Length: 401
Image 1 (cartoon, rainbow, N blue to C red):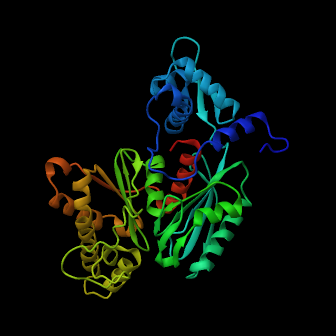
Image 2: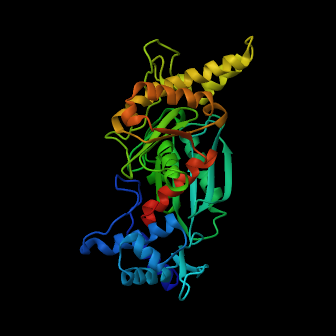
């Protein structure tokens, strides 16, 4: 519906956005080639936007070379996108090239704002207002004090209301990274720590706030952030260590969900045959009992009473890394991954733990195929889920990531 005073650009932009579905589906995240004529226009619009979103400032000729589209097609699409205020001219290209300097283009990264929500921490719910470049413009943290069930849901409402009050540009949507298993409709199938089962969170938030909402698992949000704003080079597994342990998987540019939406739920895989501590799921020796941040931190505190605290801490961290390697080696072997990224407290994951993880993976896989595996820490820190929540919205609404 057209709003009073709405400009032609805003109406056209709204029409384009209304054609985008809200959700994180199984489609490839990034358009990367031409398609058949009957499907071409919408796809090629997204292809131009993706090129600018990824590469930054480009001339029309640059975009044509990158996309394989004709210069006439690119010029036509750019004119349309500029009329919708999605793309702007940023000035002439500097440099000694002969002829008239090219005019550079970019996505207007201030054209929209996004509300991102991270529900994965055991102490606080985090939220932020971000722009299209993933820059955090305003942030809010809400202590949860062990809240669960309906009380936790009400706190999510309150957090979003606080953030909406400081939005200063058109809102593209709300993205939420939730712990637990989340289906493609944004319903939380199971989040034991929040006492949520079968909660239609995406539908509830959309109904309450009247804007597009995308909800996914926090580890999936994190891998999307690494894909768009981090240093990801291709197929990628991101292991998120916090209150629990989970993973997000990107294969062939597509986020992997699994038939029951539990792809990446590695925290409750038993690692080893030597027993171990009792897990919250009822089994002994799950990966979470070795690696979840609260358990690992407790073990390290106990090491301070040892005769040689530094040596004892190193043993604890190497053991946790070895167990992580045991869990990851079959996945690396089965999927032929080239990169695994760890996200969580650097004080726990760096050094001895990472070294032991990589040694274990390499000792349990074929060097010919997996010897070049890269294992590194994410550089996105505590904001990784917030920024991933923004990527979810950008992908579902603009078709780029």
